[in-house]
Structure formats: structure tokens, C-alpha cells
Image (cartoon, rainbow, N blue to C red):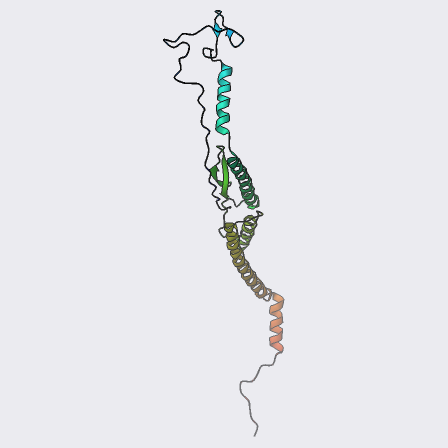
Length: 228
């Protein structure tokens, strides 16, 4: 998990320049007279009339050019915004690599995939600036299972090259669970060895040896006689 990094920016939108005088008379408006033009700047239509830039029909190519120009104006970024986009891209890559390291080392304890928090850049794209992977840190049903889970959680928490404070806290908690599991496991093994020793002494050969030793061992007299 990586702590959230707040990066602010102020987008700059270029103003559209006005072309021509919007109040000027244009050919085709009522009360306006269009003078015939000649020369290479115009072309003739099918009726033989001149086609000027003012009355030229709009084609699909012209629409595409206009749209591409508008997109170019909207996506044009200044130097500060370009630097911010580069920083956000680096942050996005670092966050995704960090969370993927957690996921790969989780050993099946991860609850789903990584979750990310995003920031929109001046280019309109969303970039990951923080994330986390949920991992099951509950104790197991047996000391062995608890110890195995604790070791897996520690490995997953410390898998990234730059573990966060939250990652270190999770690893510390898992270490405590591992110590407790080892203690319980040692106590369980000691109890099993003690019970096994008692069972080993209850064999037929052991019972026969105990009777033989009891038969040859002199018994103390309950009273001591004193001679006069």
C-alpha cells in the first residue's frame, strides 16, 4: 500500500481566435450584393458560377479538418502540464508495480485484486496515485496453519522494494502471530513427547521388570526389635 500523493494542477484552455468581422455583410444575406470574382482563388460549380470561400459548400473533409483542429487545441498542454503528466505516469507505474508485488507474494491470501485511487491529469487521463491489496491476516485453525499464514503475510507485506508504513505495520502484526504460533506449537510437541514417554513405560516387558525388581528388593520391617 502506498500513501496517497496529492498533486494539484491548473489546466489552461486556449481561447478560440475570432476570424473575420462577425458584423460584416456576407454573400447570400438579404440586402447584400455579391460581386463576381475571377482568378485562381475561386472555382466554378456545376452551374458555371464561381465558388468563393464564403459560399463554398461544406464537405466531409472540411468537417474532419475542423474537428481535428479543435481536438489539437483542447489537448495542447503547456510545459508545466506536460511535466505533471510525466510525473503522474511515473507515479502510476510505481503504484501498479508495488501492488502487483503484494499480490504475487500473497500466496492466495489476497482478497481480490489491487484497488487504486486515481487522479485526473491535465491531459484528461486517470492515473493511479495510491492503492492497496487486502490480505487475510486471521489466525489459522492450528498452530502450524497460523505459522504458515504469518510467514506468507510477512513475505507479501515486504515484497515491494519500498514497503510503506502500512506494509511494515502489517508485517509486524504477522510477526507477533508467528511468535504465538511457535509457542503453541512447542507446547503441543512437549505434551506429545511427555505422553509418548508414559505410554512407552506401560509395555509388558516394563511391567515384568517392575515385578522382578519388587520381588528381590528387601522390604523394611515395620518394627525394630531390641535385644536385652
